[in-house]
Length: 164
Image (cartoon, rainbow, N blue to C red; front, side, top):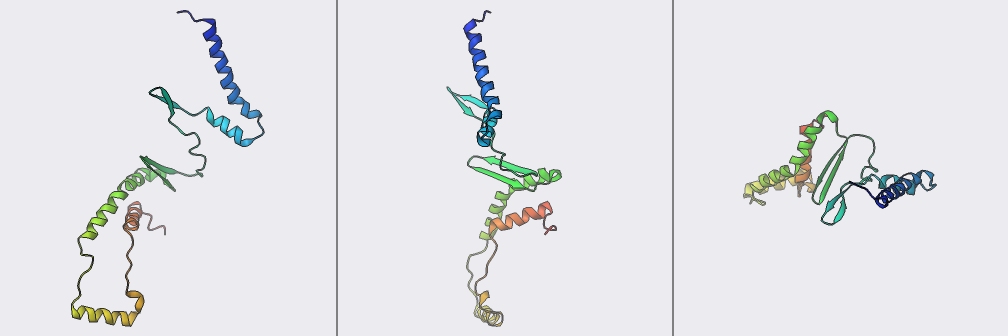
């Protein structure tokens, strides 16, 4: 197999340009340009048809603080959690995966009861006495959201309720 001088020259010219881009940032005075130049060479691409599509983002972890992070990426959604304990990372990730299911379970359990039940006259009298005794703020009762309930269940599973 013979390699022409033109192809060798083109190869080395391309390499020279790449190294020029790679190391010229060290001599730049602008920090933003220097960071961009150093990150640009770490971007990876895959071929999709006739185009090359980037498959990684070298800037993705720039904003993260020190610590352990759990990152979940789904179509149309990215979930990032900090303060992950490495010895319980598998439990935390499993619990986070089940969080959406728990919301559905809690919602379905809430559907078993009718939204409004009629009170008997005796129950109505008892309720009115209760409001009279404890104040008008009990006229409307507030319940935690289904999401909040799911998060509390996850915290209980992970043993975080004792830390508060």
